[in-house]
Image 1 (tube, rainbow, N blue to C red):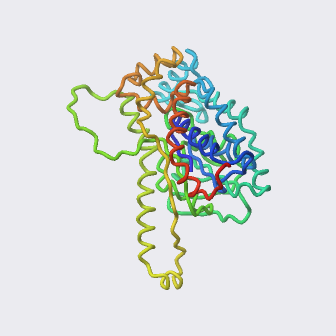
Image 2 (tube, rainbow, N blue to C red):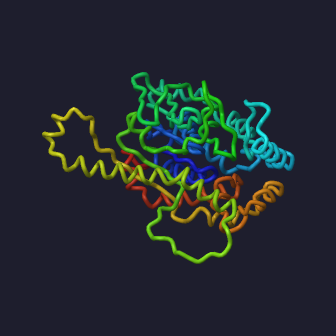
Image 3 (tube, rainbow, N blue to C red):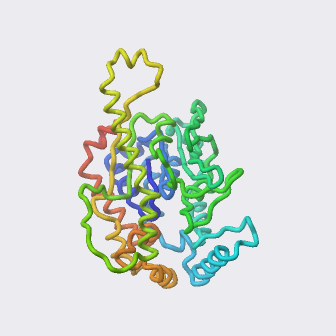
Amino acid sequence: MLTGGGARAAYQVGVLQAISAMLPKRTRNPFPVICGTSAGAFNAASLALSARNFHEGVRRLSSVWENAHVNQAYRSDPIGVYGNAARWLTSLLFGSPNKRSAASLLDSSPLAQTLERSLPLHGIQKSIKAGALYALGITAWGYTSGQSVTFYQGVDSIVPWKRERRIGIPSRIGIEHLMASSAIPLLFPAIRLNREYFGDGSMRQLAPLSPALHLGAERVLVIGVRKTIDTLPERVKVDSYPTLAQIGGHVMGSIFLDSLYVDLERLHRINNTIRMIPDETMKNSTMSLRQVESMVISPSVEINKIAEQHAHTLPRAISLFYRSIGAMRRDGSALLSYVLFEESFCRALIELGYQDTLPRRSEILQFIGAKPKN
């Protein structure tokens, strides 16, 4: 399971590089079910289409992220930045004359072009037919229905599901699904799929683990993009009002990060409850309960701090724009870390993911049931 987090998703590439280094060359994808949300959807799709050769999929991802630039994700030229922001503000104040026109702070059209060049998605069905992939799930949020929708492509035996505020729909995954899943509210425009417009799949995703379980997963490896908090934050007195970037950073955190750890806690409680139920009772029960193992790999340091070190690499026009809302300040670095699609920052996150993962080699290989490289 590859979570959302904008540019933070580069961390996942480092984790996958380390896992790739642990496995024999030309090995198949060790993850039969792959789920991705937001920027994690790009990484998930790349692994899925290259499932017959796991190393190739990781190399494809590495090539994209190690050479990333902001202008591959959204327009960073002066006209693109300020013209789009002006249209958004005008639409906010006076309404849009065209009800179908997109209103967002940033123009994400370059991202669609980058994905078209980088991800030949027809390879997903080839992976399924070859038996190297069971299912790929991409989640987006429907603005009209208010549902968390997982579009999945997999074997024919998978049954669509419908739960409170979340459903699974069989689909042929395309670039539009990835764009919808990564359409961060306000920053990027919503994407129309079928009958409604969709935004970032992390929004109100009450049960992030659910798609993987519905697609048949019995063990879930989660690659997160937030350092696990094990101590209470220090409470300090402040005099200045929070900047837009500081507020936006907290909003992003609540969208991308918080629900995952709540869902993991819920999974652990359910597992503990099942262990307390006698085997005979479980056999006679009509409820389909099963224990699901989980493993989480997440950053060992705060990604915000890394973003501060690489803020200067942004193009001048977008740098001035972020400075105006406080994103270039230390207390605005949380927001910056989601949109800093620059080579040096992404490479730093990839290296962090690689170094965080290597020491857990034995644990990871045992969890995914893979034989180590000789």
